[in-house]
Length: 518
Image (cartoon, rainbow, N blue to C red; front, side, top):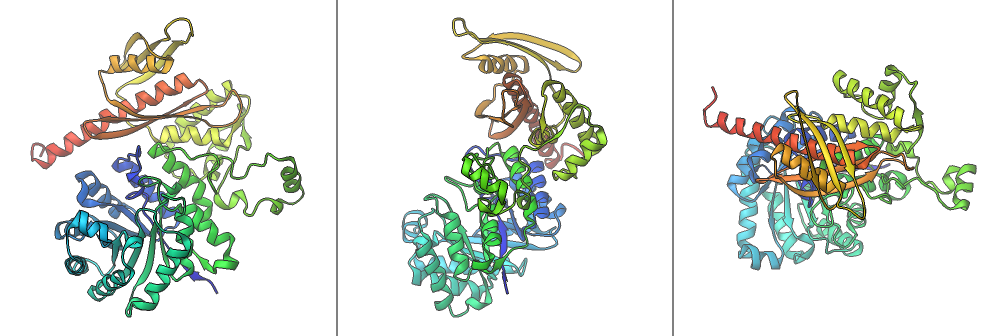
């Protein structure tokens, strides 16, 4: 009989700390709702003390997302614990996750505290958290580099103080499966009160072993695993949720463990996180990469045609992977379009979003002979990211010549009035961006630019994702078109519109807080 593993998703906390990733409150709520549909057990919604925005996001997720436990992270400090408690208070089920570093290098170089002082801080934080909720998680940060007997002393004290989950983090990705599995086994054997808590594991991928270390921890008795969608996270990232879950599912005969994850939602969740964070999924990424179910070698193709299991150990449908199946064309009606979106997992679009997506689909049909599922997904992701538009894209004329300086003429509309200008640049995209800066008077810093083809062929849509930063506010813009210069302009203008929208929203919230608006 299989035992249950609890999936603790930290995409919205640790994952958002990925370089280049930035999510606003609404985007975090959208991802949290999708994580609930995916079936994760715990959502670590954020680090409430870190910023007013993070606090607000955690609080709104606690109010709106039903099903999973909503968790807030807190250092082992009273102010952190109190702030986390306030943020998660609206949740049906809530958890406070508190932590303090325990390794020698952290104790001596960062905290400059004794072993006893660290234990006292951990105990005090856990006891304080228990005043707000019975569900308290504790992590000895940098556990994999902590003296193992001292770590066991800390864990024992934490459980005595009221911790119900003990997380063993490989914070810097230092460990390996043999060592990490042994550490979990040692904890189970040496901590006398360990049966009063669930052992959790949280592994980073600095040496490419996060998933392997997580599986080693599970085979040695851990029953909660902390991970992120697409493996995003600080530095090299975290353990990948989809890889851990599908390992347990495909090799249930070996692990004899199961999760509550609805695996058919994996691909949909992956695409949402990638789109909103602006972090692309590499084509050869396990489980949800574009090439995950592709077969190039003739002998492989022959085998799959005769019997899929010769070279495929899981079905694409098991993870909700849609591939590039040709399914729609210019004669397809609105009803068929809507039904196909539902089949692809987009059953939460409102009527306006659906209608706008259908209009774009029809225009795309005039440009492409073949429209694939991935084309539909790209269209919907564009529409889903729309917000009130200060500036509306109208047209662009770009000239690229290796003998003369490239130029671009861009026309945009504001308040019904056309605005048009021309500029030169290092290339047509650079020239277009200079024009848009000139017309909008927005000089935000371009943090990231990413271009990917949606499908194969020279008529494929290009998807452009850009990240802009201004005064500490990061926004992501997205655009797609069969012309990559057009897609680039749309993405840049989308980001500028989002920057304006969220700056105004933040200013309004600040005024309301100060009592200037009644």
